[in-house]
Amino acid sequence: MHVRTHTEERILFGAEEVELSAIEQLVEPAQTRALGLAVVRARGDAIDGQRPMRAALEAVMVLLERDGLDAFQEYETGELAEFRIFELAAFVNRVRTLSCRVKRD
Figure (tube, rainbow, N blue to C red):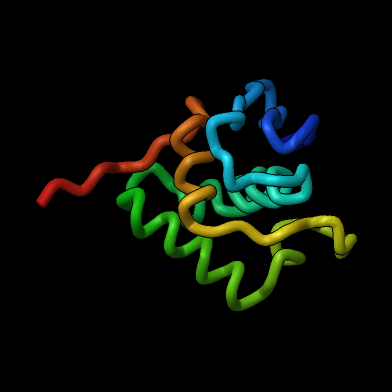
């Protein structure tokens, strides 16, 4: 899937443009790009449509902590910035083509 970052407030995620202006904690395009690449990397694995949202987000963050930002891209470029689980959740919430199961207690 193709990820193109326009600004920290807009990202082209495949064919879908995702608006992130309401996420005030995103301060640079490198964070936005890292989020997009992390979700691409996690699709079909951590974000599989079967796993509860919390578990999917935590699995992405474990990958980030274990392997660093370079785990999300094919070639190491050093052009990504770290994000928190809160920004990841806000991004995933805005991508309409993703699906996760909601666990009800």
